[in-house]
Length: 282
Image 1: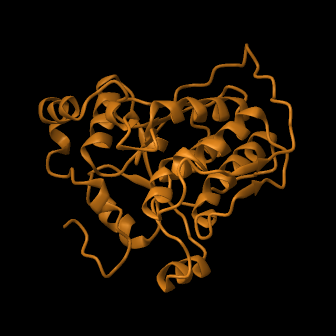
Image 2: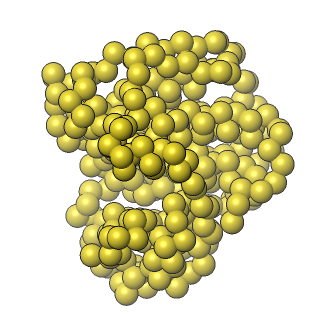
């Protein structure tokens, strides 16, 4: 499925701008220059998200490429006033998007929602049809797929070794793609399955935390909530259903309460391998 719909309303424009900032990390890291500016005005919330993504969000990338950390990036913004969120917006019927990766976390979230009487719409952002085909075998339920394409030139640069490469905050990108989709299709809640451990640093460099999962952390969830709430005028809610749970609690919940997922659940890290030279599900 494509995003479709009209994208000239203010909410769509605001979400598209935030998405452009998030997707930009994939291109920025090719050279990791010391200054960054936006060609559109940015609200305080968007400025905060930009700074977070291009510093902590790329922490592992900087460290693995032997670049200074914390990075010294100069940000240049044109200020835009934040929109006022309507306090008495007309409530809409609850329609839930559940980000789905085929792993135990997203299966548990979907199971918990169904146990609460809510039938979620499973959705996934993929980089190839190969990944979509694998994910389709991870559940008996229908999945909505949004296919994202990376510029071929960037792929060529990465393979040639002429560009820096490394981990990017992919959850930030996928979250904003789902927020835009939700706005255009009438969903009201965007549910992810990030657990408690995602907020913990995986290492420290120069006494500063480096978190491989920064865009899954509670800190970044709060940043995204502010962006999405402002952009949608309070009509979209974004949160992680499993935020208080440990890996052990999630595994126990899967084993105890979500038997329908037992034949399907697999590591989402393997499910999303889109390079055809690497076997899936190994």
